[in-house]
Image (cartoon, rainbow, N blue to C red; front, side, top):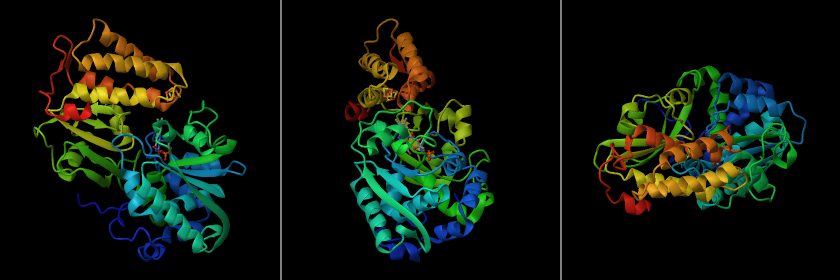
Length: 427
Ligand SMILES: Cc1cc2nc3c(=O)[nH]c(=O)nc-3n(C[C@H](O)[C@H](O)[C@H](O)COP(=O)(O)O)c2cc1C
Ligand code: SF4
């Protein structure tokens, strides 16, 4: 708890609309340092620090940066600010509270990989974030820091802000490319991977907002400093999004690998409702449920994988024992059936069949064989869907059934008591 925020240090202190104030609060010092280091050294630092992507897939950023840097131009950098995962709001807070830091991160990444055009793709339902980031980009152009030069170096770079139109699938990197290209947001088959064939068919570095802003302190303080926080296989500062039945919901910045207990009880002030922890959804709708038995788990990518859970984008949604878990699962199943883009059958049909069974479960009308069928549908989606949406559409439901002691004979989850009004809100 003695940790001093790094990624969110300026939020609440800096005027997010003022370039001058950003500079007065240490802004563009990282870019200055990056320009002095040069592209190869920046990529070495990101690689040695073992920064794992914060958008959910935990892919090593250094590998992507290196891969794009060795490809011929033209190439692109894309900041993924679509942030549509239920329960995630960390990128919004960065963009609203410290938008210049994202612009600085995009400039550093573009310079490192040799891109002269970058895009920031922001969730359409984030009007303030869009305004603030656009204002930051405009201010940098007006100050002569974008366009022909970045800071005092002749390096042409243009940044364009694009807004999403409300589709969860457009956060998936290749669907996002299609969207920027003006097409319907359908994911592409991979390989080829974006580092070789990305936006407009060109090599593209795409990173989450949080991943990109990690580059700022990293180039200033180096990989050894970065690795002092959290486990060596997934180090650094981390933004966790606390919500649900918790006394102090909100954004928490803590070292990667902080325990779930610390997040809920020390940072979050404990559980509301019945006061007793029923379960926690980690990683959002595409994530996994854990129980009070898992409170000692370290909240980093590797530790959570070991217990069949996922950090995802850092979502921590708390449910007390009075919550109607069947209504929660119905909400999740509806979400996936609604957001499936329909490009591949396992997900197009699977999310619908899953929803039908979960609707029956929530209405206490399960038929014989339904749970077996649900498991088979879920397994098929996980194994055969072409993108992460279908591959994770069953995770929360599977882990709820596995961990919350669902009793098919009574149709109840043993860990959850009678519904408490949340049921109506979720219906
Ligand atoms: C359905 C779906 C939605 C996604 N939404 C987002 C998102 O909103 N933001 C994000 O950064 N990554 C999202 N991703 C992950 C991206 O495809 C990609 O892995 C990420 O942008 C890479 O950045 P990173 O390496 O910095 O994590 C999503 C993936 C899927 C399958
Ligand atoms: S898995 Fe689902 S969201 Fe992804 S391409 Fe297939 S139908 Fe579309």
